[in-house]
Structures are given as C-alpha cells and as structure tokens.
Length: 160
Image (tube, rainbow, N blue to C red; front, side, top):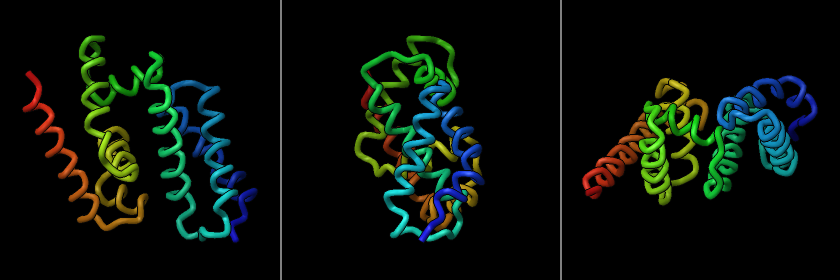
C-alpha cells in the first residue's frame, strides 16, 4: 500500500508547481493539488510506489485538464494563457479559434493522449520523458501523437 502522507510531503511541491503552471491561478492550483492527492488516497490499494513522481505528475496533469475542460463555458484568464501558449499567438480572436480547434481535437481522444500532448508540446518533454511519465513505450507515444497531428490536419482542412 502507498504511503500517501510520505508522498505528499515529498512530492506535494512538485504537484503544486505543475498545477500552477497549467491553471495559472493559486487557489485553483491548491484545489487541484488536493484533488490529486485525494485521488491517490482513494486508489492507494491498487497502485504501487513504482515511479511515484511520474504517477503524480500524470495525475496532476489530468486533474488540471479536467478543471480546464469543466470551466470551458466561462472565460478565465488562466485558460486563455494556456491556449495562448499552445497556439503561440497573442491575438484574442486566434485564441478563441485555438480553443475551438482544441475542443474538437481532444473531444474523441483518450485522456492519456491529452496528457501526452500537454507534456510533449506544452511542457517540452522529449518523447522518452513523456513515455516514462505515462508508462508507455516511446513508439506508443509517437503513434498517439502522430494520430493527434493527423486529426488536427483533418480539422484544419475542414475549416472554411
């Protein structure tokens, strides 16, 4: 069984930094960090302490992505900041378009694929680092990201 308290003491600051980076808001980041560890606590009997930092990093990323997705209807500064980083464009109209494209792009993919995309494209992690963090092979990550890029191309072609 996982010692959640020890992991909280050791990896809590890392999880909080991750949540701050993705959410851009201290209060929401603190909530996301707590939600990450509550989830760990709920699932502690089925998890092992193998690569706890990678596990917590992935869990925190998923929690934050869920928070961003849940807040989709509300315009939030942190959401715009994340989209601007992804789209690499400071134009508000382009950010709105990026939000629509990302919503369509991620609508039908596994949550783990979204996590991989954020780790690789936003965080700048290598394929090897991303694979280690999510527990897949490098070729598995490469295939999922290639399928995501193909879906993006298809969406771009469908745009008028």
